[in-house]
Length: 511
Image (tube, rainbow, N blue to C red; front, side):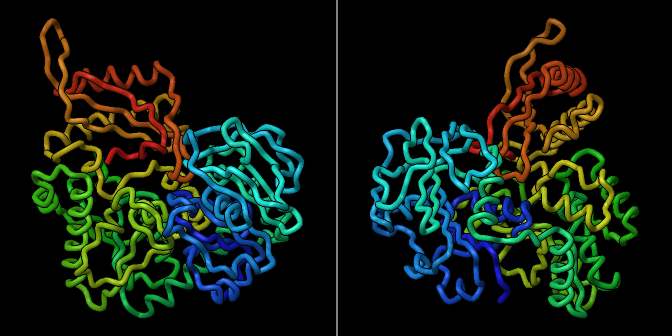
């Protein structure tokens, strides 16, 4: 078992993996393990520091999550975040209670002088997300940061190198969160910066070679960033005759998407099998309106199509997917007690009868890291910069049942929005943009005539990793141009609205 400079114990926070991502961004290698990880396994990794993540539970609950007691006696620095802070407070004799007012969102942190705040201002913007708080801090601890609603927003026992924070330094909205985590790793724990995407690429390519051996791997591609990077990694790891790239046109794609994907793989000089499965997917979705049922139906249908194609070849034992950790932690708890947010078609939507062994080299990293990896592998910058597009496609951008008429309205409205984004220079300024068919009709007036037509929502967000996001502050004249064209050029739409919710509490996709 290789040495891991920083080990994160996962208590179920939706943000846990961001801790690892932020530390890797600083060049410090980090791994995430369940909070209940065996002490012997923790010692075998020889960590220089441990971070206790946040989580949805309360430390005073009867079945509260707790690590092995020996973790506290390892003699290495420990940082507690949110639930981790409350756990540390309770463990050392402090008191944790339910807060009178829950605190979610941005807060101003007033900090005192401390090595862990090196290079930071006395006032910093941080992200809070908690319902419990420390009522009394343990003996030997001092307050090193406060906020308006949290008198114990940051505490420390400097002598024992124990640090605890009520806020989440790992999320993008904590402005200097990366610096705080970096200070803990480098100044408190003494870690070196030795991790980078080039090293990750070499490690994963070697893993693919060892896993696949001389068998064949079927790679499901969509033309999106993730599956394209997976295909490029397979191309580096294996002879071309062992790779079968399959693109499924499931009828849920954006306008001209199939042609774009085929042209892209010509540029990569990789053979691509295109399967027209529109009728099969639409039949599976007929009358289905529940989002989870949609995702699972699409996931199962993909595997059926891949399985059918694999039978046309010999020795196909593996299925490669562009699964990201964002997909995993929103779908199912694999490393800790995380709450399910939604089942992604390539995680929670996979059928039990599937016989493929999965190859998922991106499963532990995030979208921004995937883009860096793609550039490391030599993929074109315009391919790497494409906006994310979900595997279930336009099915989860249709509220309710999926119909051909509804798909037409989304495709055309999305195409117009994309054209306007590029024409105004905003395509590369937002992280993701798309339209959603609300399946809500409203009264309008066109040419003195009454209309009763559909409403389309424009969703544009700014993000780094997809785990948190804010709505994009796009100028009104840009939005007005999109709205005017959508209403004037597409029969059946008479109203356009703009989504101004952030993640959390909303997700980026609507379903």
